[in-house]
Amino acid sequence: MSNDSVGKRVVQWFDHRLPLVTFVNHSLVEYPAPRNLSYWWTFGSLAGIVLVLQIVTGIVLAMHYTPHVDMAFVSVERIMRDVNYGWLIRYMHANGGSAFFAVVYIHIYRGLYYGSYKDPREVLWWMGLIILILMMMNAFTGYVLPWGQMSFWAATVITNLFSAIPLVGDSIVTWLWGGYAVGNPALNRFYSLHYLLPFLLVAVVFLHLWALHTFGSNNPLGIDAKGPQDQIPFHPYYTVKDLFGLGVLMIVLLAFVFFAPNFLGHPDNYIPANPLVTPAHIVPEWYFLPFYAILRSVPDKLLGVVLMFGSLAVPFLLPWLDTSKVRSATFRPIYKQVFWFLVVDGIVLGWCGSQPPEGIALILARISTAYYFLHFLVLMPLIGMIEKPRPLPTSIAEPVLKGGDAAATAPTRGRS
Image 1: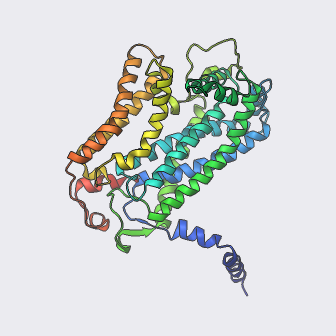
Image 2: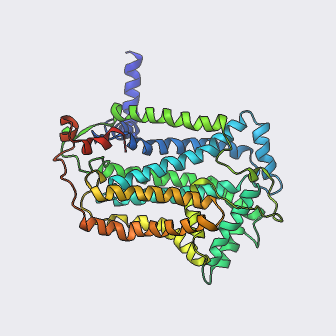
Image 3: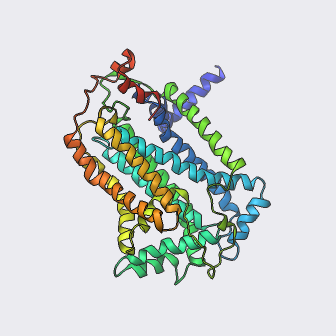
């Protein structure tokens, strides 16, 4: 009997008792996917790969990090200087966090454009938003750990936001700090949470994939597959696209790691934390800037907190706020144009969040904040009622195999 036959029988014996091979084959190889997915759809897979990269590099960093206010900053410098390839691991982890947010933001905007939040994928959309919130929590706790000036003051400012909550706000802040100021108990709590949250994130990602495989992927046309002619196996057709996307992502990520590792960071974080010296301008990481701009756009602290958290809560209502029966913006002439206003609005809010809250930056932040909520709460329901969508194809295969018209095929050249 050949070694191949023995190996095959061993795999079959094990798979019969714990069908891991069958599960992987069904989920990643034979999984039927719409035949018109473009490169925009690679960003979901890229997000999963970057998450694994973050967990692996984070575990290695945790082996050398010391969660104590007197040693945290020095331990990070030791990782950079004395640990073999510690500089590479830390820069991969720090810039990998930015890559994670960039990939997920693009993934979410793709879902907004192609209506991936509509029936029957509401829970899939919710799981994605929960993943984003967990990412934010994890990124914030991780940003505190180097215990530089920006780390310390960012922790102080953000945790103090909870003091705006009536009656219980001060108690929540005291509980978060483990005392009456940001110090060693707070650092230890953030370190514990930063290590724990990625594994909770993995669990939610599993639920996200489960919901995805229940009804299948959406596609650029926004119509459901009607038979085998509309679907192809995930492997090799989309694994090849994912590998190409991964190659592009790694080129960009490694360009930052090797040539501009601190470009997305703040220089004040290379100064040890000093509670007696407040930085001239406290700025969070770039992926928090739009929400930071919303927070500061109003003079009232409680209202700012409500608006900031409301900006994360409103997208959960999208399946019902969008009254259109058509998913894809490809066939929605009005919504297609309005969508890009939201993209620009997010960029403007990001710029406003990076500036001091005064002058033109404050005015733009207030206008952009107002438009953000107007877009979801007013424009989307209204457009869905007055818009006349273009006719949908009868099947996915029709425009794919016959060429279709320009409007139908243009979005499918990339992968959403």
